[in-house]
Amino acid sequence: MKKIALIGSTGSIGKQTLDVVKNHPDKFEIISLAGGNNVGEFLSQVAYFKPKVATLATQIEKDKICQFNTDFFFGENAFTNAIVEEADIVVVALVGFKGIIAVLDAIEKGKNIALANKESLVVGGSLVMQKAKEKGVKIAPIDSEHSAVWQALNFDFDAPFKKIILTASGGAFRDKTLEEMASLKAKDALIHPNWQMGNKITIDCTTLINKAFEVVEAKWLYNTTFDKIDVIIHRQSIIHSMVELNDNSVLAQMSYPDMRLAIQLALSYPERLTPTVNSLDFASLGSLTFEKIDNKRFPCFDLILQSAKSGGLYPAVANGANEQAVNLFLQDKIGYNDIYKGIYGALQAFDGSHHVHLEDLQEADKFARNYVNFLFGV
Ligand code: MG
Image (cartoon, rainbow, N blue to C red; front, side):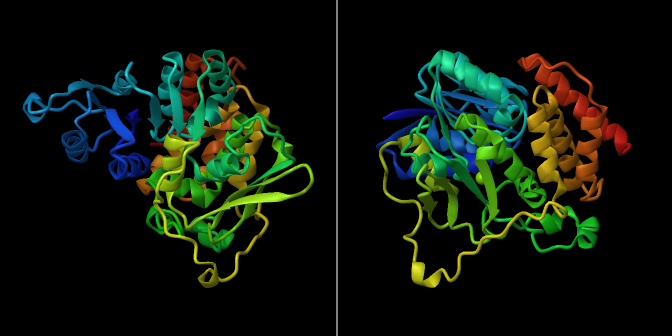
């Protein structure tokens, strides 16, 4: 029985993780849950899974929790209390920068991680991977692309390869012209063609920032260089990514898009449990297509990669500016193209040191958010 600490239980990945646990009560047990602001949903999760520890970002009244035989903690960073001694694996399913706090805490406590939070590797990949190595902590990817690569490499992060080829659906705006994009609103972006995901990542898919983040994620997870990672638009999201080996043989991992496959595998590998998805019906799939990224229409892709190549705190600035700009876009306070402007401006304005400790990252993140607020007068 594997004991799971789930950090970020009310988000999209969190709920799907609980679904996997529910389907395999003989394999997995929830030892702790950390939720955000969705109190109703969170309390029903606590009632069902009866964790030892539960943490919430928001304080709630005592009479709401007295019925549970669970230790509750409250506050913005209370989630670290959910990374308990008894946990065998910590699922980090938080969205955004704060994910790195959970990742570093789990590493410090020597816990293996199933990682859905990509921002932690984007902003602090060198720090995270170095600490994980020191502590002998294993990081299993939950992101579908990195799970695909991991599967193609037979769960071996050190296996040799020539190239990683990440696939991208292209997001909801893949066929929009630059002119059309200028007037797009959050509601237009929140319909992903293939995947069911949270709001922030769905916007990141339309800008291709999500894909740029995944390139950075792949660089750190597979200890490689940017020139060995390609991205190809694959509209059908059937091939979740590929690996080209030294003899030019290419291995692809395929399935209908369903995050529970990657989640379940990150929890159970090398064992494969009963499926969460239907068998692929190849005859009904039609064509699988592949296209190059149009960098003119999706300028954020190169911008994020540039910040990652600059290294130091620049990725944290780019990420912080993106988080704040997406936040404002979701509230219809800025336009779609302002996301690029916010990130570009913050990167230009930043002139910081290249130390990458948690405190430096937090400062760079704060700088970028404040810059975006200042730029758009909010
Ligand atoms: Mg992905």
